[in-house]
Image (tube, rainbow, N blue to C red; front, side, top):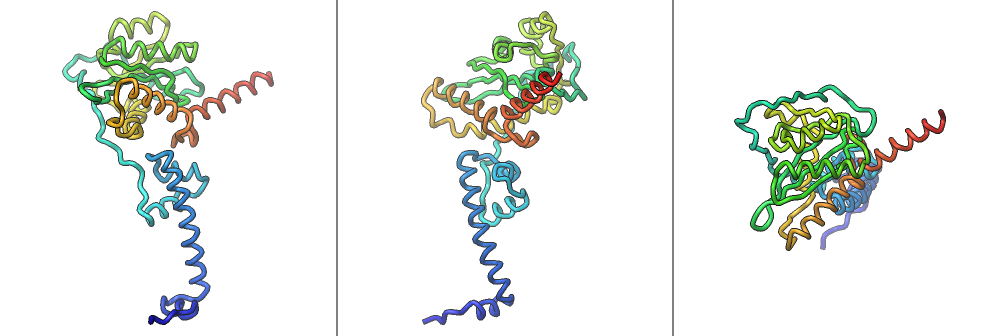
Length: 273
């Protein structure tokens, strides 16, 4: 029968003092407690990296990263990025990047538009979204079996209806959908300044790029869904999650919380005048 070592003998065998043994034991217990908290956060937010988890748990990000590495905890992996090729070979648009270098200090200064596709069943579903650059909220969106000028215009109209106002600038890439009469001329008629990224420069629309880089990943395996209606419901739910629950790494809170905070500051200033 193996001899059981007391704590003093175990400490000597490990080459540490007895106090060091107590410290290691306490550290292991604390790490285990943090591990369980991380697993709980990942259960609701499977794509969170260590920085967002640290914000959620109000802990040091280095500690969270160390514990995740120790127990092999990882967020859901990012998929291959979708790159639109529709505008390759087309001439340059007649619009410049009007928002380069502008850092809005209030909502509804710059709206950015873009769309992506979701392969589903026997075809594709296209999702167009509008993001407010200041709050990072998805303020308008539209779904269609086709990607065309009506899809992107529907998303813009949805944003206008929800915000009940117009942006100063509307920024997008140079896709033909955004250059169309129904979209670009419609915005100009309303007094909105149309802005477009330089051709083949997706980094000039970083807020939409950032959103789509995670959206499909967080949407999960859509093969669990049976029809277009269930997919639409899942997409609506994912956008709600992004706006109201998911921590934005730059904002340190959800876009919806940031918007509410900004609105409360404006109300406070108005009352003090």
